[in-house]
Each structure stands twice: as C-alpha cells, then as structure tokens.
Amino acid sequence: MVLGGPFPATSDTRTTSVGTAAILRFLRPVCYQDFPDSLLPDAIQHSYPLGLRRLVDGVREA
Image (cartoon, rainbow, N blue to C red; front, top):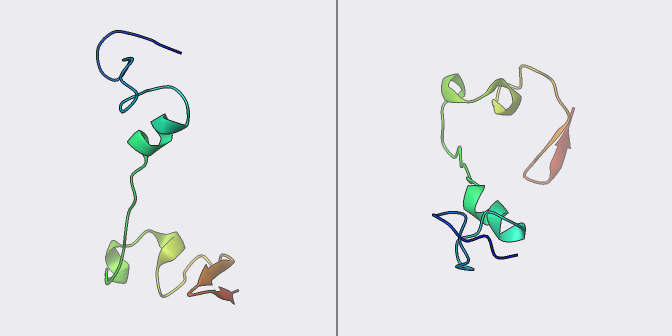
C-alpha cells in the first residue's frame, strides 16, 4: 500500500506507518538493570510486592 504524504505516511519503505514495519518504529525497549526497587514498577520489583507469577532468569517464581 502506498500512502504518500508527510512522514510517517510515506511511500519510503524504510519509514512506514502501515504493516509490521510500523511495530519496529513504535517499539521502545526498556531495560531496568541495576535500578533500585524504589524506582521500579511494582510488578517487577525485587521485593516482589504483588506476588505475580513470573520468570526471573528462567526460573518460575510464585
């Protein structure tokens, strides 16, 4: 599909707002390595306040 128009709606295949390539543009990888618990979201704190089932280094917790 060729959209035409200003970025990101363009026919340039490197910057598209349509299809699977759009996922890569809007994906924002986040790393919390060495963050203190006070700055982490509750679901991923080391103290484990929510008690959710999760994998940590390949080991199931909860």
